[in-house]
Image (cartoon, rainbow, N blue to C red; front, side):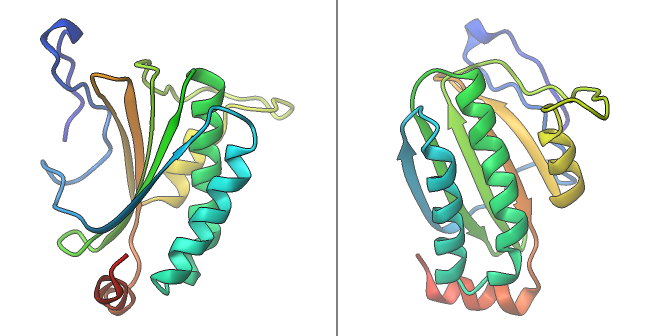
Length: 164
């Protein structure tokens, strides 16, 4: 989906997606958690990531997924007030593991230039480096920032058979 901007008063979506296809394929095998807006949600999100990928036998992707989930949840804590929804799903059509982090801040993420001694500002660069695609979509309640990792077809098919 190309980046589009529609006035928020029309309750339309605003997207900054980096994705080759025009529409999001249907997902299956999803699971979701509501996390409080507190620092303890970051390690909890990492544990949930490792556990869910273990259930789906996608262990090989737990390192990248854990790092990216940690970045997105940390950003949601820093820039939004309120609960954070962490959602994982599998998509057989796009052959992807998808993670979504929803928060109540409508502000879209922006890639920052960083210097060598900056303590922050690298999370979106990591999304670019480690994910196949990622994006952010405004919702009525705030936004969803998401990324996809693409495991080998056999691993994904086995995960889809296991379900949630």
